[in-house]
Amino acid sequence: MRRWHIFTRGLVKENAVLILMIGLCPALAVSGTVRDAFGMGLAATFVLFFSNVIIALIRKSVPNEVRIPIFILIISTFVTMIDYFMQAFQPDLYRALGVFVPLIVVNCMILGRAEAFASKNSVINAALDGLGVGIGFTLALTIMGSIREILGNGTFLGTTVFGEAFRKTPVIFMILSPGAFLVIGILKALINKYVKKE
Amino acid sequence: MKNPALIFLGAFLVNNIVLMRFLGLCPFFGVSTAVETATGMGMAVIFVMTLAAWITWLVFHFVLLPFNLVFLRTALFILTIASLVQLVEMFLKKYYRALYSAMGIYLPLITTNCAILGITFLNIDNKFNFLNGTVFAIGTGLGFTLVIITFAAIRERLDLAPINPSLRGYPISFIAAALMALAFLGFSGLFGLT
Image 1 (tube, each protein chain N blue to C red):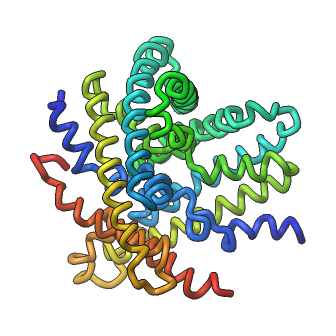
Image 2 (cartoon, rainbow over the protein chains, first blue to last red):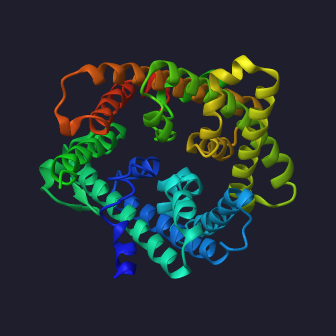
């Protein structure tokens, strides 16, 4: 029961992007299309899961004074792995995400989970926590990517949604930078109105 | 090689780091509640960004490339920047108390700021030489300062404005940032820069 709670907590109730407002830079930058948003979410989930597991494994042998540099080194190892993996197998996605792939290393969500959870809990719990927070992040990015791609480009994953007329004259600014700020602002306002009150 | 003046303008206005590139959003929203703190943060970012651009350029061209260690870029850059900020903080604390009290508390905050690390990666990806990298870092830092100070001024006014309670705080700040980004879109195409 408690394990299930650890896993689901990161999905909705403590969603990194939409509730806690951390990891915003990639969330806003790569949510222009569903594909980029989902790809970024998966990459961050991979790093989060494995860094949480490794940090939980070595948590008893890490001296307290140097724990942050050690966590950063572990995280950057997995970031480099996913960086080279995407470069080799998903070159289009890699080009679209650009500098945000290596920048997963400074995503405060990942170091935050390492410091607040993985360094104090068992390997299984840390793995579940990493998976939950990662999937929650992917979910938030995919929601933002869907809204922005449908309105800003008239498509969903490249398929036309509202017919050709809208496809030719969409709300272009939604896929440009102002759209990102606007979408998260409105999502946050809706959450404040309908979710947080309970 | 591109003209340094164009690189500066591109980094300062056209591809503004916060509004167009989405880097450094944490301090942009976190430290922009008052103009005074926003100014301190901006100064610290310009300072560290320039130093970080220098040191990572040297590390990349004199350590990583000759020894064929480019795959260590991410790990080495973040460690270099973290130790650099620590050194700068100790140095300022000992020798320049006034400067330290103006921006000292912001220094540790920007160690893991994605704007700093992002700029060092972009410097390498754009194959800038030392001069262009410096100009790029200063232009980016100034662009960050301009935007965070303007945004802080807007937020000071928003605090007093009558706003729907569910929009108060983050949501209205994001919408204000969206309008600023829309205004900055007007700069695209300036001097042929995209």
